[in-house]
Image 1 (cartoon, rainbow, N blue to C red):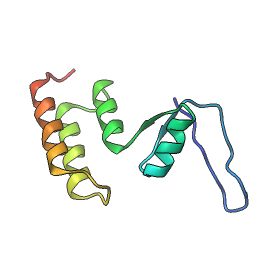
Image 2: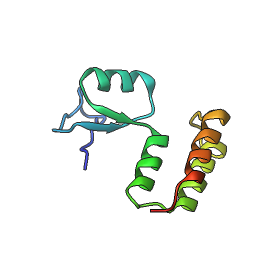
Image 3: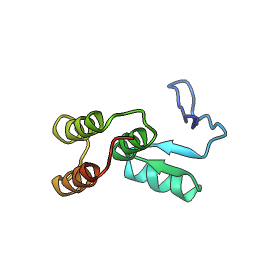
Image 4: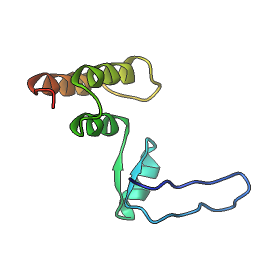
Length: 94
């Protein structure tokens, strides 16, 4: 399991742990993490990884993706959502 990077209001710098993956949404933070050689995953990637690992069913995955598009303040284009849903529809539930 990946470790987390945290900053408290009492600290002037971040506390780094030994990790190789990050889950982020901010583009600048993503670029910085990738420059450090870390694998990065956004919300879409987290949902799809959960499905691939059997932690979400096909219907739960589709619902999460649809909610990500319709409820979340995070940006997800209609085109990308439709492409991902179309690909998921071709798969069998693991």
